[in-house]
Length: 493
Image (cartoon, rainbow, N blue to C red; front, top):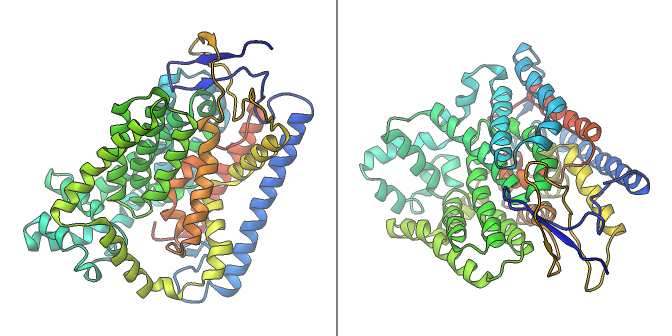
């Protein structure tokens, strides 16, 4: 039996098995590529059918029900407002579609996540500003948002007292404060105290968070998956909501936790595990949906097969205990906050929103619109590939094998252990499972195009490839979905 060679790249930390053992989905000419194309088309057709069903069902039964879903399955209402403000966003999309695959393939490994994150911020800002630059900050200045509660803290003259009373006085707070731990309010208060107060700075933080989410997802995915998926993460339609909602920041914090956990597993590094824990604990103080996102990180870290998993797990737990412990010391106990938010949630509009529609069609379709048809196509191609190329046995190598990284010459070493999976292949499926759990939990009846932003970067890693022509086609479809949504949807974000 020939010796398998492993390519160790110093940049994003990918570990690659020899291509001849298990080719990438659609990686070459012939039956494999033809099968991948058929699977991609079937995935895209399924995406279109889901969206169509949700739109028709929502328009017929939900849009006029007075539950805020006049653009069901999306929050808001339909109103065509195409004008020249979308031209900059269209130009950005055109540049990424044409140059993105080439740049992603040739960019030095260490710079790829930063470049993709910056490009995602530009694309997101261009979409949000299509109705005017004030539109970037306007949603965060709403009376329902976090800034609206800052006068209450000033009245108390004590941030710690506000945190301590968060659960007790939850029903007196704006709706978004009711739905989250006190972390976002503490952030807004801190920015205000250092002279960066106001909705404009919060919008800047949200944009930075989205850029961090894109960069962190690429770091966690590893070199080959990052080179394939980077342009898709830049142009993902979820950018329509990422630029005007702090959920984009929550996505960034959670993504840093996941990426740090995967890097810790790859390197068996307690230091990175500690970073993952602190970031994960911070994410928990920002959104009650963080546990499901962090489970994505656990799956990715497990796929990397760390040498001492228990030590890393204990270190990450200790790191998470730091922010959670500080919050508990100030008077906020996370489980109590979750319970109080659940009660307020069911006493509000959630009880009036149709469970069957949103669980079976509305929520999945809203996420489908946020991720675009490329993700559905990529997931379908991966599923078809794994079904066709499953190779059981002690010498099997599964997962998504990477392409050689032209920026980092590989170092050949003997392959001494069987790799059961690669994080870049596992993360999209783990995110899909997490989304299904979130949907079944009934804690997100509608508005998931914003609430589920933390899952989007991990799903977008499944964007199809290889081949620049195919990638450009799918990139163009993602950009088109985003531009149509921006031109036709009027929402609070």
